[in-house]
Amino acid sequence: MAGGVAGNVISEGARRLASGERPKMSDLLLTPANAVRVADQLSHLRGAAMKLGQMVSMDSGDMLPPELSAILARLRDGAHHMPPEQLNRVLIAEWGRDWRSKFAHFQAHPVAAASIGQVHRARMRDGRTLAIKVQYPGVKDSIDADVDNVATLLRVSGLLPRELDIVPLLAEAKRQLHEEADYIREGEMLARYGALVGDAPGLVVPALDPALTTSRVLAMEYVDGVSVETLETAPQEVRDRAMQALIAVVLRELLDWGLMQTDPNFANYRWQGESGRLVLLDFGAARVVPGDVAAGYRRLLAAGLAGDRDAVREAAVAVGFLGDAIVARHRAVIDEMIDVILIELNRPGPFDFGDRAFVGTLRDRGMELVRDKASWHLPPIDTLFVQRKISGTALLAARLKARVDVRAMVVGHVGGDGGGAS
Image (cartoon, rainbow, N blue to C red; front, side, top):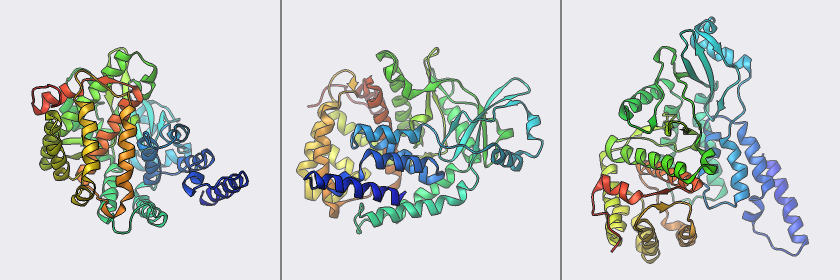
């Protein structure tokens, strides 16, 4: 992959120089040809390496050109699946040689393939339909090496300043990926979420089948639904309803349950059109939200509702969003960004996630902070995981151009008069 990308850089650079341009290296790397090459190679990988590619494809948001985001989005559409012989070996190891006798029908071709495992549809002899997630062989064993290789790439590329200590982050990334590869744990989290959601209208969590679940196979009720991304062309009311349900879940995870599924991959949500219910899937990345982190977010949200810029800045530092150094060096820029956010989020009525006019301002001001690598700061691990879920949810809402009265929902959780910013 590296050789192919380098070849594209050389040929594209020569072409631009011949036409009188003086291209920057970043422009030569971010070409459609290179994006196709990287996406194709990552789609063949498993575990942490492909998960990184999926994260980049989802979290690029407004940062990458649309054509590159579209190419990278291929990584969310599915990976290369196991050949039947390999699948059979895994299931024999987990269920025994007579595993087929457990089913009336087992669909050999997966209905979904992702970074750690692939999902098959199966019908039990008692008539139940199950979704069976089967882990790729060797994924668990490769996690540490995958993360170390990604870290080496980041260091060699110079994308991260040498002063930034990412060792704790790497250790936590390995820990979480090992947890995601433990299907017994995921089954426990699935059951826990099912109990938390209960009979709440508008939400569905598949029921666990513990008898068929092992450390490498997760069995659960098969729940119909369409990919939530397909709602891009749905009526506005449907898009709004789906995102309101998901945002409500995030608020409950953070402020009520103390438990959050921190991987906001769009594939983890499906929509049932007839019942109007949101299906929640994939709980491998579920983790406890510490009380101090939840309290910090509660203070941050309350300050935002009050339109208090100073309180927002102080709460952002306390929860670990911002470091003291960057506030000391760039307070005016940070205050300007906070003001933009407060104005947008405190407008009366539904927040229009499809109106991205203010994002350019935030991006431009934010780039000033990014250029000052000496003041870069890694938030606490728990804050990073919570914010990943919040940011990913906002990206999905933007993709669907949803309109949701987020302010009213937040008021319901943290209090306030629900009025506009002062």
